[in-house]
Length: 193
Image (cartoon, rainbow, N blue to C red; front, side):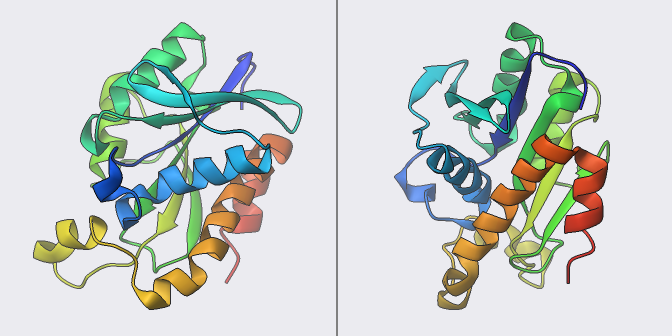
């Protein structure tokens, strides 16, 4: 993390009730959990996003939910970052990941988008890939044709049993990054079985 005055933690998802409890919206659920921990609600609107400003671990953080649909997530996040002069390395993106088993959390930095349209949109908007990402596993449906239905589908009963734990782990990963830096967080989270 550099010395921008602010940090941004953006959860990716799709707006609207139809998508609220779908695998693709796990990023939204994680930033909502972060807000709840600070007894805040993400209820302000700016730059095609819902957001709230919070003081977390002594840092000024914007919790952001872009409302432009997943594959255009980059534009609102870029507008936020430009306006508040936040360097890309001070942005944490939380998103669903089909390449990780359900509930597994992995922190990556300055890596490619891995085929995730929301992440691709962010890298396109910024023209680089220096952000920190918290990949939240939602499992793979088994065949590439089933991916869209899978990520836009609702959680299974088995997944619901561990969903809260999964969201809390991703939320705590964000907090740990803010407090101890990304390298330390990767060493802790990425080695967990």
